[in-house]
Image 1 (cartoon, rainbow, N blue to C red):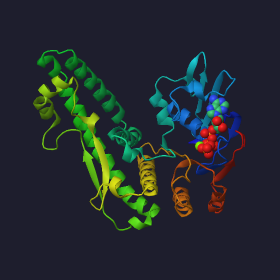
Image 2 (image 1 turned 120 degrees about the horizontal axis):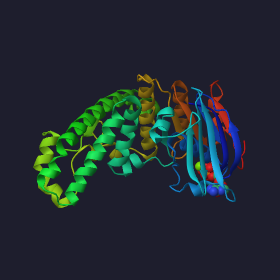
Image 3 (image 1 turned 45 degrees about the vertical axis):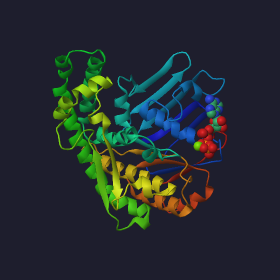
Image 4 (image 1 turned 135 degrees about the vertical axis):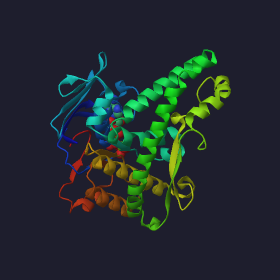
Length: 356
Ligand SMILES: Nc1ncnc2c1ncn2[C@@H]1O[C@H](COP(=O)(O)OP(=O)(O)OP(=O)(O)O)[C@@H](O)[C@H]1O
Ligand SMILES: [Mg+2]
């Protein structure tokens, strides 16, 4: 969680210092005032990259040489990020140069709900896997190791397949690949069951018309249910050789929750899709807090007002106030301030031309 944030030369923000509350931080302002830029700064600090551009040079304020984002977490760990047009990216965590980006992410677990958060339904399984694995990364200490090891083995096997190596040399990787894969599947399934449990409570609160409906887990491990991964790798060796890559495995997993037996993508309105994604993020935030690490996570909600009516925005703010998360929410709708009047822990920031 962040207790102070200083942003320098990021887009239209020349210098901005804010002391966020531990609960809701509502950022209000007109179009182009710098609201999403504040969320971008928090994202940069947590993940070392922007959600708006792959090229950080575009985020440096025109006419300047570098951007900086500096913060202090509630554990009193200083975090600082600088992107210089000539020297590139430098990150310091606890006054030391950062070794691995995952160290940064574990200090500040962050979930982003972009203005257009329909990727869950519209994009391929990759986005859904990342969403699930985000939770595991923060909850299950062994997951990161398992997943990184798995990826390395798949890369080695794929490279053997592409180089038309002998069967034995390709199959050399199979035992490890299958072990990691089976373990990742177990962890993913456990996490999904936890998410489903929380989601089934939160979602009907955000979307009361779904009260009393049945939610069920739909999980595809990435290979056929009837067989173990090692069997599938053996059986499909010829296919993989033709393709030049390993088709089955944890890298091909996918999941969703069925609603009354139906795929939510088929029944939800646009606003309901957004509420679905919000409920999932809230569920993950609760699980992260319940875990052994007890980490309080950060939720970024860019443009809460898009696709949601006032009533649903109000419900979200009420539910967020009960949740142990620090949220940064942007909106152009000044009337939202009224919804927060009774929430003593909420802070409202008004931004205008990159200033408070
Ligand atoms: N590299 C840059 N240097 C200076 N200004 C920039 C740079 N990149 C973007 N901007 C400007 O920064 C401003 C802030 O953009 P931002 O996306 O944060 O606005 P916003 O408040 O989220 O607006 P909206 O309500 O439309 O989403 C915009 O006016 C944009 O044109
Ligand atoms: Mg914006």
